[in-house]
Image (cartoon, rainbow, N blue to C red; front, side, top):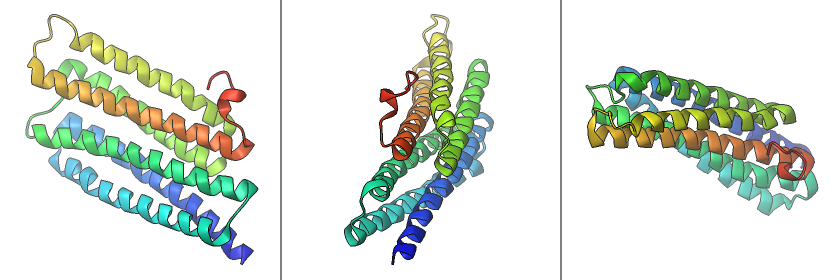
Length: 220
C-alpha cells in the first residue's frame, strides 16, 4: 500500500512538471501569435488551455482522494497540500497565455502590438518563457537556489512592465485608447505570470524545508 501511495505522489509531481512544460509552450506560442497576427497559433493556445485546466482538475481530485484515503503526515502531507497550491498557480500561468492569445485573435488580421512596443513585448515573452522553464525545473529538482533566483527573474519582468508604461503614458502616444488598453492588459498578463512563478518557488522552498522562504532568504 505504501509503495502504491508513493507511486501516486510521484505521479502528482510528474503531472505538475507536465503542466509547467505545456504552459511554457503555450506562452511561447501566444507571444508569437500576438506579434505576428497568427490566428492559427492563437486558436491553438486557446484550445490547449482547456487541456491544462483538465490536468489541474484531475490532479486536484487525485490529491484530495489521497488525503482522504491515506491520511498522510509530515513530509507526505506537505507534498500533497503544496501540490494543490502549485497546480492552481500553474493553471493561472496558463490562463495568462490564454488571455494573450485572445487579444491576438481579437485584433486579427491586424497585429495587436504597435511597432514601437514589439521589442518590449517580445522581451516580456522571452522572460516569461524563461521563468516558466525555471519554475518547472524547480518543481522537478527541488533546487532551492533556482527557486531563490526566480525572484530576480521577476524583477526583470517588473522592469519591462514599467518600461511599457513609460511608452503608454507618453503624451505623444499615437495609437488611441483601444490599443493602450490592449497594451495595459498584456503587460499585466506577463507580469502576473511571473508573480505566479514566484509563488510556486516559495511553495517548493516550503516543501523542501518545512519553512517559508521569507524566514530564511532576504530575496524572498
